[in-house]
Image (cartoon, rainbow, N blue to C red; front, side):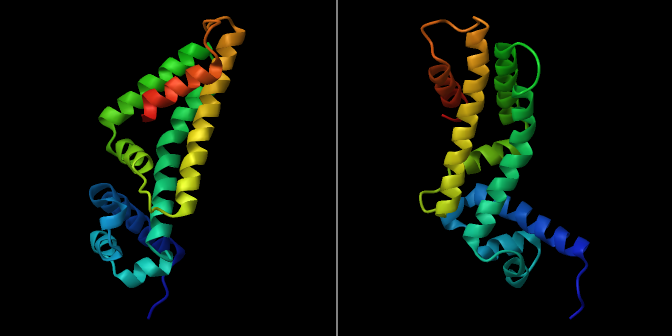
Length: 170
C-alpha cells in the first residue's frame, strides 16, 4: 500500500472531523456510529481508526475544534478595547447573530450544550472548564464595569456574569 503524504493525511482527518460533526449534530452521541461517520466522509472505518481510537476521541476532537473555531473570535472581541459594557453588548449581539446565521456556530453550540451524559469524562470536564472560562471572562469585563461605575452597586460582577451565561447558553 502506498504511503500517504502529510497533506493527504491531514485532509483525511479534516474530512472525518467534518463528517463526524454533521453526524453527531444530526443523530446525537449515542446514536452515531463510526460506520456512519466514515461513510459520510467517503472513507473506510480503517481510515477513521487510523486517526482516532474510538467514538469518544473523535467526539471530543470535534467538540474542541468546533468551539475553538467559533468561540475564539467572539472571546477576543470581549477582551478588546472600549467600554466594558459596550464590549459585552457587542459580544452578546455577535453571539446571537452567529446562532441565527452561522450553521457551524450553531452546530458547535448544540454539541456543547447537548453533550450527552455518557460522553467521555474528559469531554464533560472540558465542557465544564469552558463554562468556567466564559464565566470568568464575563466576570472580568463586568468587574471593569463595576470599577467604572457602569454597574449598579446592588449587582455583583459574578451575579451579572451568571445572567450572561444563562442568556447565552441557557
